[in-house]
Length: 415
Picture 1 (cartoon, rainbow, N blue to C red):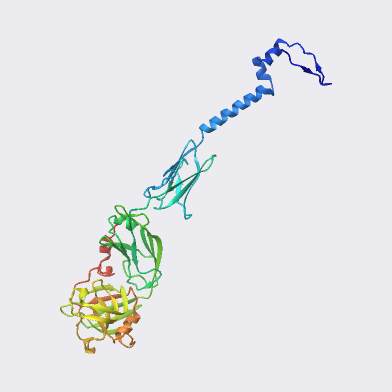
Picture 2 (cartoon, rainbow, N blue to C red):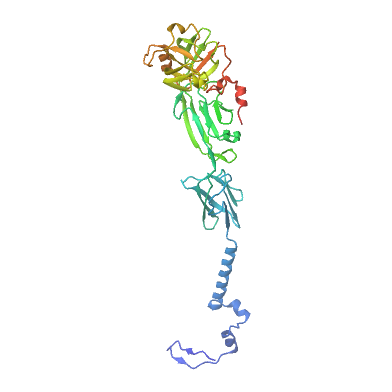
């Protein structure tokens, strides 16, 4: 066969030339080895380049970083009791971000080899997360998962109220809606700090109440911060907390009142100075008043007091007791009394266990001791009762943990 020859000069077709053996071999692709090594350009070189590109692509695919996320992409009921993990094979991780639906990020860290990222805490329950992982030199990958919701939950109701101001005896008291069996885990998730700083320790009263206090009364002017990190903390088998918040309380001036039922007098001391002395009446021989350190936990300008609520049958039912301040859960109050003769106060103990001050019906007379003491008091003020003929009140009966020594108080901590 032949190939036409094109004249460069005229473009005219010339007659075919004879082909040499070498030319025929070249046309047939049977070029000697030396030609392949010494030639430049042309189709043979292009083919070699194309073959090299395919090999490079195959190698790159073989070396592509493979990322594994736990929980897996698309999981709808992922565990919220285990950390999130991102691992890479055949490469390293440049960055990892785990973001919740509300924009919050789950903190975590890479290992030294940068082949694995682990969250420093567990994800929250009932939350959708997006995991964005970037391998070094590779394309970013994204996955999503949603954690399960707990079948049982609990919350802690705290005293005092947020942003309130209380007296120096007010503990931070938390009542849980479910019995707590893992007390250490729950207590570890709660912090109580004070400014000025002081050691604060928690003490458990049963399975549903945890109180915090310092060794001695708070200093006047203290700011207290309660940190609740109970979200997804297991208080009991299958029962998890739901709260994650910080609450601030304040301590006002110091007021400590001492009731001596031998002399039937109450002495009120404000910031170290005597403020007032009032004649009182306490519990009679059959209804003695608890002794010990008590803290005002509730205040009512007027309230109803009915004997049946404290196990005394139908002995009394007074619908408008003035200026009542609760000292114990069991029903001990310091309150105004308008129904007893004025001569009782300061002379005899004639009540059913409460501490009474002379007062008037309607709670509107600001000249009487009941009104004046109520007006000078606040939640968290300390009332100490002595010489009552009764034993010391139980520390759990009201906010009265001050009756425990510091050693006994610390012994009630789960940490």
